[in-house]
Length: 62
Image (cartoon, rainbow, N blue to C red; front, side, top):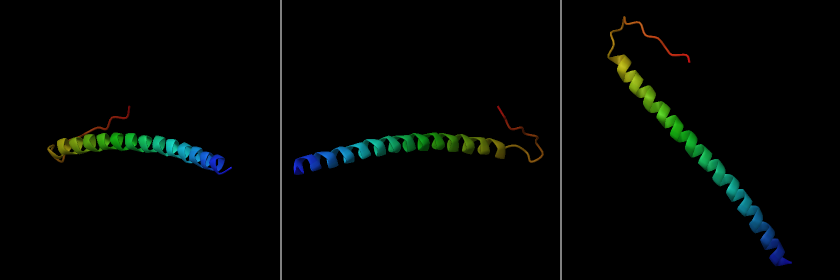
């Protein structure tokens, strides 16, 4: 009886661990993507800072 309870508890914990591990990987991927976006934004800002204030610039929308 105790073995069955332990087995059930183990399987429940194992399932939660698999679920949480999947969520962790998803968040890590999102963090990598956001870091890439941050770097691109920083580089773009550095390029724009070099332009005179009266320079017309355009933002890509597609």
